[in-house]
Length: 243
Ligand SMILES: Nc1ncnc2c1ncn2[C@@H]1O[C@H](COP(=O)(O)OP(=O)(O)OP(=O)(O)O)[C@@H](O)[C@H]1O
Image (cartoon, rainbow, N blue to C red; front, side, top):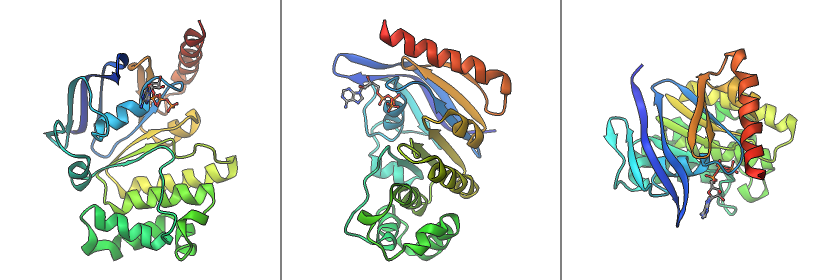
């Protein structure tokens, strides 16, 4: 499988505080990769570096065969690297459909918005029902669907989803995860970060555990053996924090 994204020896932080400590990973074409790990260990920072929303201190990132260094987030969006951030904000005064169209236009796909819209509505029937509703009045789950839908409207090759189910009830989470299964059929590759380990493993092919800014464990997501080991890594990492 050829690589769509490679991250090599990446370091990054905020001021004097180092967060990423030489982390490396790769995402293949037609692959969904999950990032797992306790809060505050650098997953979001890594994703922000990949999208050039945060500048790494050292290391290299290659997307679709080209270095991302020095490229604007907008340029990366136009080349198919789409990041749906944690708690992403919508435009509350726009209807669902207006927000979806805006996403197509701002990512350089204004000409094909109708086809994209049909695809998004087939992935998220709930968004079709709500298409004339202002996004500011959507429920939490619907808001997440709209954020993911906006991501799809940008015609991603790599779709980065950071905590899509954060704060959702189990029922809504289940509905959203079914949508993510359908999203997978629409895009080449996905990086998924979520606090729900089972959900991440169910929706991905491979996983990495990120602890203290580095990958400490990786494997196939359907490998039962690793789940227990992962839990102890998590709990060990969280325990380190408290000491
Ligand atoms: N803008 C910022 N300024 C200073 N420190 C930050 C900033 N953003 C994140 N951090 C710190 O960097 C560390 C890593 O945070 P990051 O959000 O990357 O972790 P995470 O693994 O994604 O956690 P979570 O799952 O809680 O989002 C944390 O200690 C966090 O407080």
